[in-house]
Length: 580
Image (cartoon, rainbow, N blue to C red; front, side, top):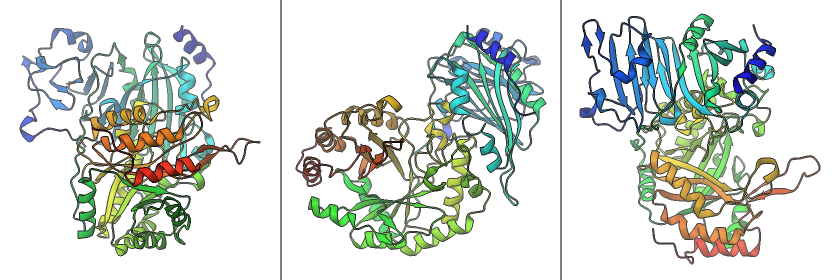
């Protein structure tokens, strides 16, 4: 049925436009490549013949369990993550068992298998590829891809604003399968060091797998349709087996901080209770610390030691606010965002993140670095938080669907801070809990900058309530089940990293907010990696016409006398934590 739908769409379609990753291994566990020769070819395992009959003569074979190269391919456990890599004189064939496909790439390709659900990353001299197995939450998979995944990059206004030239925008058969193809090239700024600016996004459908499809992203120094079609024509799906294994090292390697910053970080890591913080609207700015902080502290009869503020790259560093917070006994979690005003016009505006990676904002980044260094006291610093979403200027799906854009922005900022000798910044990696879109290429670990740059994992989890149930299907979520799920997820990838709940709160729509907050103080200390938590003391309005001014998600901790009282009792230690 699905093939019939796609065939019909194909008939109507109109062409709109003409490293290797780290693993958790010791040096002794890294094995040498496999080569089992029988004359001029390799003796294959019988079950693999169907995947290699058309790929001969084979000259080498490598077998991987996760990101670990196996000495004996017969020891591969197909319940888990198995990859096979074959080479002949011209090409390399990657067989991804949990991904359910095989594909041929140029012979010079090298692979990173550490990403697990985040896909297979391949690197060549003049190109890179990201290969992922995807699942649409909707039966109409093509509609999902076009209306959601491609919403930004396929928009002519987006392309024009960001100097993107469209090469192909089609739905056509390549080999045996219908493929949705978008190919485009971004023209970088003069003097840019970015060389891989030509992108092809290919979504391959197969009726027998229903809502499962595969995505191939190719980025290269120049667009070559013949090469793209050759790669796509080699793609063959099969029934997936085993499960992906993420094997990215995340245990932090600490920088050479100044004495005060090192002391603060060490004390934070060794806490057995929660360091509570708060955010108020425009709390930390160039004009100082907002008076709402003192008003809240008076209501609570409590002095916060941690606060949070936002700043934007096009603005001046908010040093007066940082100083006033510090002099009031507070360490600041500072959020730097590279964005349009209020993250507006994501599908049509010029995206400043491309300008950052092209080097056009280096002087402004350096201004921040120098100001932070002169400040000299500890700053918890997160850059472009919630990048694995669809609502930020720097979201992966907005920045050419390429998670590496986020990492290049981060590396640009991090590198300049290092050049300026900044030794008082503690770097936070802060994805959103849940990937939006829920796609493998958008997996949060695809954005991770590296254990040598990140010292804290930032986690974000809101109980949004059910005000927007009809619009967004938002529901009330009790504290403990929500944070149990968060803890289970991040224990798999960041077990040896301290965590900070960089922002969180509960709405009052749909449930008992006081009870939610009581559970927060009861159970938050039981999650051993969470060392600090910042309540987002603000509200999200309803922007719909006729409903302006209605607070749809009231996150205020002083919303009622009862919510204020429970927070007061909690931060003063009057609510006993549960036993871990």
